[in-house]
Image (cartoon, rainbow, N blue to C red; front, side):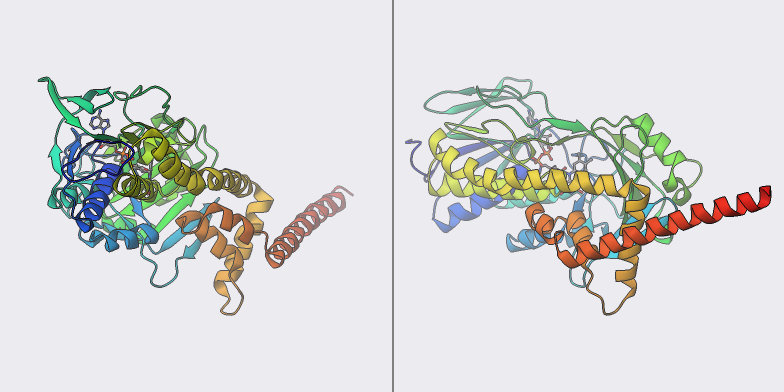
Length: 452
Ligand SMILES: Cc1cc2nc3c(=O)[nH]c(=O)nc-3n(C[C@H](O)[C@H](O)[C@H](O)COP(=O)(O)OP(=O)(O)OC[C@H]3O[C@@H](n4cnc5c(N)ncnc54)[C@H](O)[C@@H]3O)c2cc1C
């Protein structure tokens, strides 16, 4: 077939990876092909059984689905209600002993899910409900063929791509190869010349089986974010998920020992039992840079292994890259030049520049939240906004945008330049500084009086 033309009737696609990116791509391609009366054969390769508990079935993530993604999934006929463990009502920002609640607006839907069959050493009472399995089943219903094997190598030639899989010398020839293998795989690293995967952070996550009553009593339906500075951890997030509380330690290289220490010796320890019961833990990677050349003749790389939003909404990014790839191969072609101009360019426009704003915003946010004076300023202002019926909730809205990722980082940046908000922040900082100086002055005077 001519690679400068769209895939036609009877074309074959091999998808490596049955995580969100692989399934989204399959679902979207099948739907678009059907609209054009094309029959395109898609085979998805993935060894993981997503119904299995623990690492054999899990793609290691906090499992928070945000409103934007849920709506896009509904549009393609995927209803996440059947696998949702908890509906999330907002975020609580915790500094020292104070937690400030930021509720999401009425009608905004956020939920937490398990990617696989739940934690390794704990049976969840709701039964095994897997998000990745739900997506893969949907792709299968649309006619995709799921092959439960690991891809060992790939051979590219002018006429076709060959995928070698499993331990019995199985192979599959296709017109197009879609790499949806994420960043936690070593097998397909040098898949073709020129491609390098995104650079990653090595984060750490654990599931605490505290029981839903305990979790609702201490955390309500709110994701709690703790700003602390134990070794290597930038931020600790606690996500209610039915019987379990998912703890995510975000940082460049977070060791499980450091995460455990943080749980036992920081503010979060007040919210969890003294004796830690851990159902499972993992060390996934998270992409923090763009990839190099995620396309070639007959190959396109999507999801985490391609482009994603900086430290936010990874599953939604998988959906977006899958959509751009599906539209390109169904409507335009599969040559390197076409994929560069139509897939890669759109991804770069969407993620590359916005992620620069994202890096700046998250750096600043981290700096503010771990600085005594600036964090007091923030939280005092947020509390005032939350308790007032009439005042505009400028800062609360910006923080909610940062946590839910519902608008681009660039828009958050420009919203935060609002002169009224900047005036309020400056005034509040001055108030706190004057209060602190007064306290020091009073302390000195009373000390001098005592000594005299
Ligand atoms: C700690 C942490 C918390 C996160 N929390 C969230 C969150 O709350 N919300 C959110 O939206 N995103 C979150 N993310 C990001 C999210 O997990 C990823 O963006 C998302 O999983 C990317 O999907 P993917 O399909 O590209 O890759 P993956 O989910 O990694 O799927 C890749 C698939 O490819 C398969 N595979 C790999 N190699 C081969 C091979 N050789 N042969 C066959 N199959 C192969 C794997 O088995 C896997 O199933 C989080 C990430 C981390 C690390």
